[in-house]
Image (cartoon, rainbow, N blue to C red; front, side):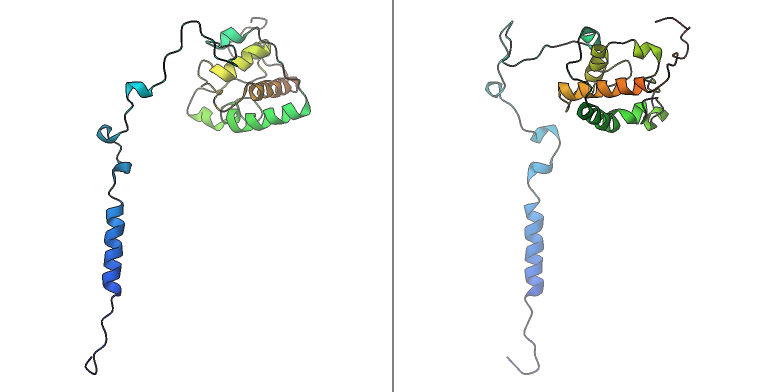
Length: 181
């Protein structure tokens, strides 16, 4: 090499090759969201329909709505562990609408109809099964909350709601004449 000349650096070429490789690696179709590139299911891949009158092993009773659960009895005792679990679940899932103390006015109430106060006499008269069914299947403006919760965890929430009611004075629901259900 002649004197005074520096050797060429290969760094720019290596960087350019690395950038090109990175760009080409991102060109697969896994990021596409249009229907043309979606995975498809062939008819033989889908599960077969259940035979008529079949009962899956270990199946629990199925209810269509909260009205079907009115006669259920609470199988979970209101022990301290149950009340703690119920309070934790209530804080995470119910307090945004029903408020942290269960008296309505949660932050979601600014955008949707206000959730009722658990101290209302009409709610106090409801059975534990109906409250469990409301948690499981939803209510008039309440979405179902059973996803991700076991049946026992929902009963724990019922126990917590009953605790809220036991520590709150009875309130007549707005627009409800005294003494009517």
